[in-house]
Length: 156
Image (tube, rainbow, N blue to C red; front, side):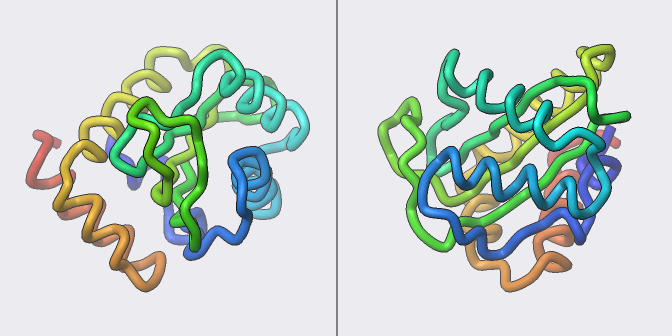
């Protein structure tokens, strides 16, 4: 599974306008709902916020990967956003977040969900990749950056 199988230009938000973790997550879930990628906004929002209460998805290096599984989505879908301001995410390195990948899926797609999380995590640990994303001006540029990086980094 490549990221562009679950992420598209209409699922990239530059910039995210909210100023705190819960509001950013809500802004992203609302976008998924507006784009008709999820059926039940409230179930998905609750699943992601509940997951966030267990342990922050702020993985370090200015990156967060909020995710959850719930009824209300038919297949795995990703959303990517760049926050216009630093967001306190209780990250493992205590640094604020600007790059946010959201991943949602149905409860019966655990394997593909974990594979997508792993792929996102590995890509986001590359500093030059993060820097290029932060400088992106629009969703097309983001998708091009991701596609080029996946071609270099993974055997597809």
